[in-house]
Image (cartoon, rainbow, N blue to C red; front, side, top):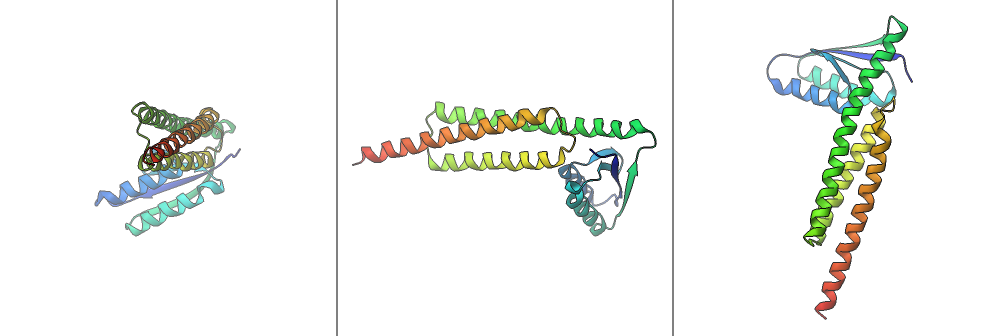
Length: 183
């Protein structure tokens, strides 16, 4: 998709460490690939612009320095190597997402097994599903080369959505049933 890369070189004061952690979190959230001590790379595409801007702002606010470089490989295979490294990092992200989908499914199955059909529990599960949706959207935006796990993740999100809809129907059926008993 791209043979141009954005390379960030970040230098921060050793203390307080919270600044280094904040920049690290921002770059990880943006999908940047850590190349070593304070050096990060990502495809030079618009999807990464906001995360880069925020990381640079955090760095400068902390009294650090940030250098942003546009890069291309010296050899034709260099861009391919970066793409492989970047896609491997996205595969790890998708694996974590799939693990959370499994946890979501297990949580719904437990609530059904113990017949916990309350609006409060439904709201909690809907919030968990919304978090999965946001995470999927964010991962999709930064998975510019298309990691192989992305398709399965999309299917799993659909399954989680269907499971939550089923749970919601059970909650409303239980509430309707309980309202009928009191009449």
